[in-house]
Length: 224
Image 1 (cartoon, one colour):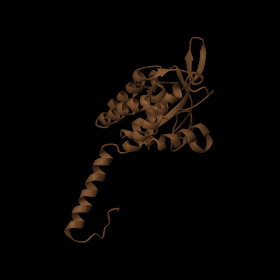
Image 2 (cartoon, rainbow, N blue to C red):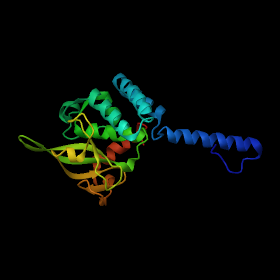
Image 3 (cartoon, one colour):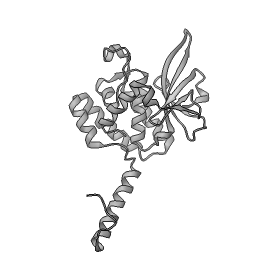
Image 4 (cartoon, rainbow, N blue to C red):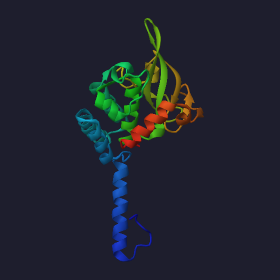
């Protein structure tokens, strides 16, 4: 039963206080994930997903106690160290598939979109506000030309220079230090932007079908 403002007597006051304390601790610990749902989803996927989910839960719990910069580094390192890069055709047999975090952990390999998506949901679970994170489609400049790529960006403020989490570069770096990246568009659960700037251009879930689909699968796995 949900706590009620009309609970009678001192017992009601005690119950309200306990509920308030539980809610406060839940928020302080991050709270944007459902541990039991994640475990159940991982169990259905098999032993690799279960082992990966248990490791991720430990990483989320530990990083939720860190400052923002250290948290970004911890989650970035978790996926960069644990997951091998592989093309979608090799991992799923599909031309362009976006994996949820548990799907990525079950496979043990994925491409740039999969890395960025897993870091996005894991950071939110650890307590990072979703509004400060954006998945950014970029053009990465290489010696042979440019190629499409995706990274995750963290913004201290909407107009601030973001920090970049990438599977190609192990260290979390400010955008100015990544001159090899040219932003095309960025998005999160709240919206869609041209480039990486502050002006919103629409609803990403309405315009990007793969994002809408992976949002649903990640939420079914217990992520916010």
